[in-house]
Image (spheres, rainbow, N blue to C red):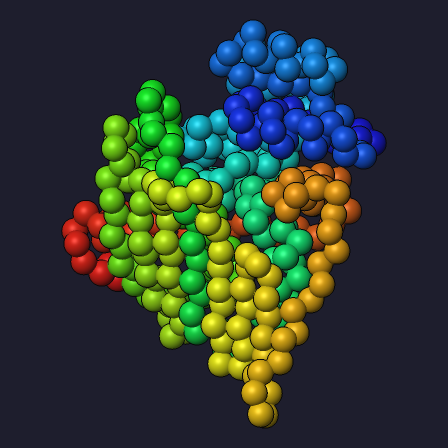
Length: 335
């Protein structure tokens, strides 16, 4: 492997242009070596703007290129599992935007391939890297909040009318709506705080989106084998002045919250505010989380950080599948 990690970018939509390209372009130890998109003129223009030497004509060219060490996959969700498998088989490290696959069986197939290679696979769950999340997690891991018996998470996006549906609004290409788009990350974060215990059952209610094939809102309750629960509220249709994104952890000896960051512990005669101070950074938390995530991916691929395959993503997608089944059948689904 070269001294720098030579990275190719597959898919040049909003997330790639807003986050992946500028962050990777600025990271030490990274060489942005090529880009690929179905819109070749867009790919050519972006490559010129960032000084990227190669524009690939097809996905296969990316996977076969021996001069690439890693691939960042930012394509529509239904392509993730096949492209990730092809990249791994092409001897590439892979960072793939969530979800790893829109079906649990496909996620399991990807993990099987990854575990049979010496390449590193990471799923882009950037919320785990937020500065406020990083400040809150030690309280949970250290047991300072007691037993976490309920995690309540919400990701509610301000309503934007869909004039022209995109791949995100079609079941075949997205796998689902707000649950697949917002719920996968929110559920991942909640389960990550709890170290991914086994789920026992799922109940969900979803609201169909206007002018789209998928749901625009969902309410989900996940009962866990350890007696705890996760509750999610998700929507693309919030009629309000701005988005709402929060998570609250309720424990037997304390609680934690983001946004805003707040941590409280029970003491003998009341409550103690132990909220840590997170120094303001030069970037907003969204950009900072991606910068830390991409840095982690690069350093892991270079062999400078420990690695374990993202096996938890299989259970995650089983819970998501159970949520859709629960909504269809109007019942709680056992896992």
